[in-house]
Image 1: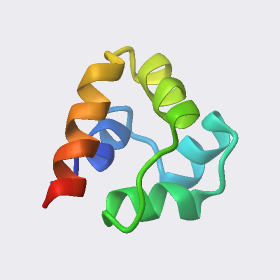
Image 2: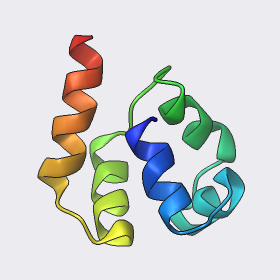
Image 3: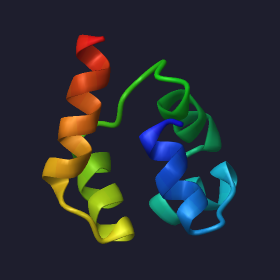
Length: 68
C-alpha cells in the first residue's frame, strides 16, 4: 500500500478531509497516492507536522518512489 495512503488511513481520513486539513484539493492527495506526482517541499513539511513524523521519513519514501 502507498505510504501516503497509509498515513491518511491511519487517521481514518478521506482524501478530501486530508486535503482540507493541508489546504489542498483532494486531487493532489489522490495523485500522491497513485504515484502520479509527489508533494512539494512545503507540502512535505505540512505532512510531517500533521502526521507527527519526520521530514526524512516522507522524503525517503518520496525519493524511493521517484527512483522506481
